[in-house]
Amino acid sequence: DAEITQSPRHKITETGRQVTLACHQTWNHNNMFWYRQDLGHGLRLIHYSYGVQDTNKGEVSDGYSVSRSNTEDLPLTLESAASSQTSVYFCASSDGSGEISRTDTQYFGPGTRLTVL
Amino acid sequence: AQRVTQPEKLLSVFKGAPVELKCNYSYSGSPELFWYVQYSRQRLQLLLRHISRESIKGFTADLNKGETSFHLKKPFAQEEDSAMYYCALSMTQGGSEKLVFGKGTKLTVNP
Image (cartoon, rainbow over all chains, first blue to last red):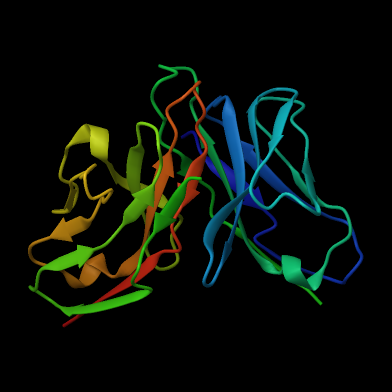
């Protein structure tokens, strides 16, 4: 069955280290998104992509980067991890090939819990 | 600017009681509204969207443009409805599919 996966599911790292979180979807969806989920803030968009070689900054993009070299993957990189980036990170994807006037359902991965010490 | 407000962080009701999770939005264009749900130890998933005008798991939500609201309602809550609920807003201009989420409401249905 098609799905969206994230790895690792849990990660502990130290301040200043580079960290990459993986997101992989097998639906052949055009659109992919990264969110962080924090108590009191809900879900906030970090970066998103509407297709290969396309990336865009979201609401809280500082300190994060993404690249889209193929349809299936959108890795999220924390260039120099900070304690403020301790959070649960969710990847999502949506079709993006239908009517441009409609928003497609987003399908979420299981999340990655990142702790920065 | 787009904004979604869920005024209640926590909502607790008894089984069989009606439940209403409030959502208000701020957007000058034509809104698309969604409710997403996250059950314990499960991933976030779409519950319903206003354009579908459907009832999912007994939940309904009506878009009220005059009051800029999209409240989620269920006449008789069940214990399995306990979860985190997020209201989300999307623009419909230019094919953008970004969602703006509210901060969420944690619903607890007590036996």
